[in-house]
Amino acid sequence: MPLEIVILAAGQGTRMRSSLPKILHKIGDRTLLEHVYALATRLCPDKITVIYGHGGETVLKSLEHLKVIWVEQKEQLGTGHAVMQVADDIDEARTVLILYGDVPLLGDETVEKLIPLAEADQMGLLTVDLADPYGYGRIVRDSSGRVVRIVEEKDATPEERKISEVNTGILAIKGRHLKTWLSRLENNNAQREYYLTDVIAMAVADDVRVETVQPHDPDEVLGVNNREQLAHLERVFQRRVAEDLMRNGVTLRDPSRFDVRGEIESIGRDVEIDINVILEGRIKLGDNVRIGANCVIKDSQIANDVEILPNCVIEDAAIGQGCRIGPFARIRPETRIEDHVHIGNFVEVKKSAIASRSKVNHLSYIGDTIIGRDVNVGAGTITCNYDGANKHQTVIEDGAFIGSDTQLVAPVRVGKNATIGAGATVTKDAPENALTLSRANQVTIEGWQRPTKKRS
Ligand code: UD1
Ligand code: CA
Image (cartoon, rainbow, N blue to C red):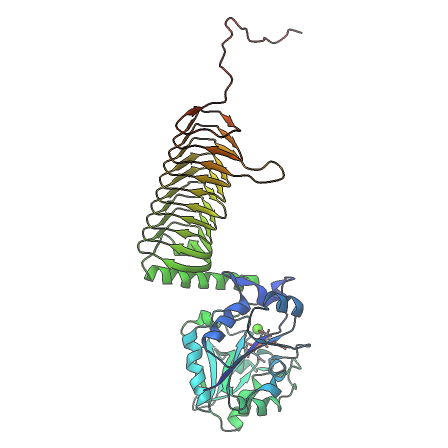
């Protein structure tokens, strides 16, 4: 049956104490509204409308990629008033589902239980039992247990305030009914607002049955009003991602100290991830990948049997099978590393290609460089790729051996199986199969005396 979704997102979010509109705060790498949008699109509706208000310009600009109809609610006169903004456009034959831009973790299964109720010409209302219902609208039932109305905290009697079943605000109803009831809403209540919740009593009066559904997990219906709640839902979200990975055969040494801010496009078997690892952007991990503590990996592909030791930062890189990276390595964008390469501690690699079995084990900078197979780059080697204006390339061919503390002043080429003596400053191409040195001859001055301190 045709469905349309209205997402209420005009509220100010004062308690966030932020210059950013509330719905633009993030969980994982997505804004709150994008989480709700993702759920909405999975339900394949004919139409998604977002009612926005506060920070309108910023919201529209940041979220212009969403395929929704944006409707502005200039003044926030209540949840009923928000839906009234689209009353004229509601299709009578469609089911209308009301969602909230600041309730990001609602589960598909939960909403999927609400929609058929509306399709059967009832009202589907999502409620939850809370130990502390303070602040929420309470669900008032009659002696036979039927819902009769919702009463807001500020309008409730002390007796009603004791009710622990609360309104989540999420509901599904036929457009035909919603249109009629919206036209009858009034604001004669404690807050002088148009309450969407008043449609419940109208449904009862019109003999439309109100059926409630409870979420599978109460965290699903939690909204974000302040940064504590944002942090809580971030953990709930991360926990879900972590559990999903563990079910798929990933070992997380501590799922509460693991974060995904993006999408894991594929992940192999027996991957082991130590604590405080952050995976960002689009990530592919092969089988038996081991990631040590405190690594940040972004937009990268890591092949089978790679070991990443603690404290590495890897971005926009492809790392081949059986490589060993780190500890304390930084792999920067546009780096392609083939199989069984070793990148050691305090090595920075940028925009470079390193072929199989080569080693850069200690304290080096490799930038704009092509390294062949079986190359050994000694400790402290620097590719001098930047002349202050332009970047230049270094090429090190297969089997070359670069002595420690060498500077390769690009553009420069080191030939196949060439050897560079330690401490060289290589400014011209080094021929293959030869030893190249750039080093003053060592001298010893016999009988030389160290200076001594002058007496005053
Ligand atoms: C509302 C419900 C209450 C429920 C609670 C759940 C009403 C009258 N009350 O409370 O029963 O327990 O949600 O959190 O509906 N919004 C607009 N425009 C407005 C007002 C609100 O878009 O003019 C949006 C807000 O951005 C927010 C949502 O509606 O996403 C709820 O608004 P909020 O003020 O937090 O809810 P309450 O009215 O306190
Ligand atoms: Ca609220």
